[in-house]
Amino acid sequence: MKTLLILRHAKSSWDEPGLDDCERPLNKRGEKDAPRVGQLLKAKNLVPDLIITSSAKRARQTSELVSKHCRCPGKIEKLKTLYADGPAAYVKALSSIKGDPVRVLIVGHNPDIETLLEDLTGRTERLPTAALALVELPIQRWTDFSPATKGRLLDIWRPKEL
Image (tube, rainbow, N blue to C red; front, side, top):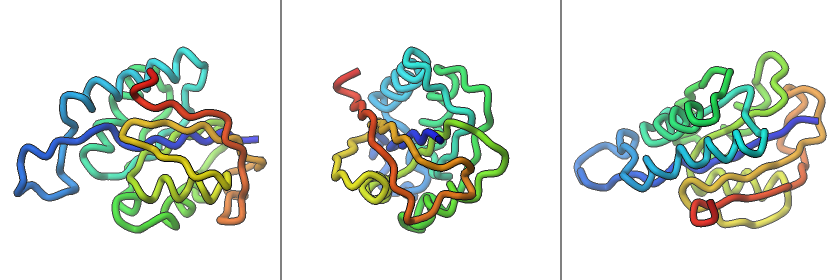
């Protein structure tokens, strides 16, 4: 069995309207929520072995803050494809994982992560910014992961609940 943590990036800033969307940073609420997600992961013994994140600035910042506050021993992989290539990019990223991490955190954007969660679990769930879903996957290796993989939703945490 593998464990997948699906996290929508924390709240981003719209203070600079001319800024390219990919370069929007976290706002104050995002800077507060991301560390709380990291603390939750640590408290629940759900520290990921690997973090895969969109290359968008708000997702990278979210990943770094979460990693710091849960004391993630693994690395953070940044993928441009998770920013704009749709839900299939998430499947490709997960099925391409090298090595054998047991628990992986993927950080991305809506609507793609909500679609990923629904495709995996059959459940339609709203994932506001900094929402985290925990999914158990019936696979032995990440290379076994495919669009046909069906997992079980174990929990969801939303920032207002933390």
